[in-house]
Length: 212
Image (cartoon, rainbow, N blue to C red; front, side, top):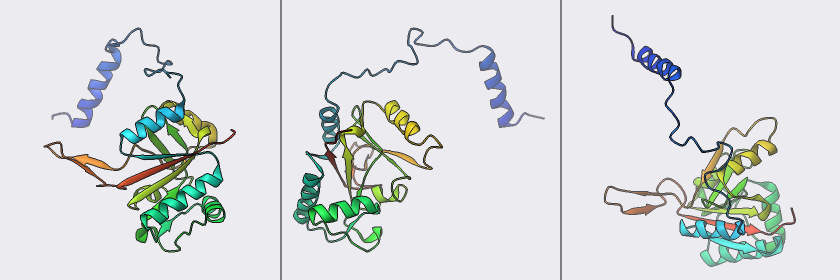
């Protein structure tokens, strides 16, 4: 009787464990990042990578300026249905910048506003989690995603973001952690770039200076 595919795979794994393949980089310390932090301003590095990936970045000196800029963007784009599932963020922007949020569902919204867990400067990535809002839907279901972040949330690499999450949630990581790197995009065999296929066509990041 021939062995099953599962047994064949397990047999190969056992053999590999007995005679492991030598590391192709024997001098590499696993505790040292392959991408060392250049020591530059992380906000500048993030802004550069984020905009290179078609994201739209804005710096705000304080929360008052944040509310004013978000309200101005909504007026400029003529968005009538702006959705925000996070009560604290919704109340703050409504009180400080006259931002009006829709009481309708996310499915009917023109744009969605969320916070985030971290910003990864090296890759221009926004780190989101289910602990902040409605899982992943709030950042991908609307045609436009507006992310509000603080300068204290800037980290250099993805490993730093994961470490920050582990420290923030010592009792257990959120059920979902996602990494959003610019607007949704794909390309066909002829390398024609299409934006907004499986997520928002536009992504805005408002970075607010804080004292943390």
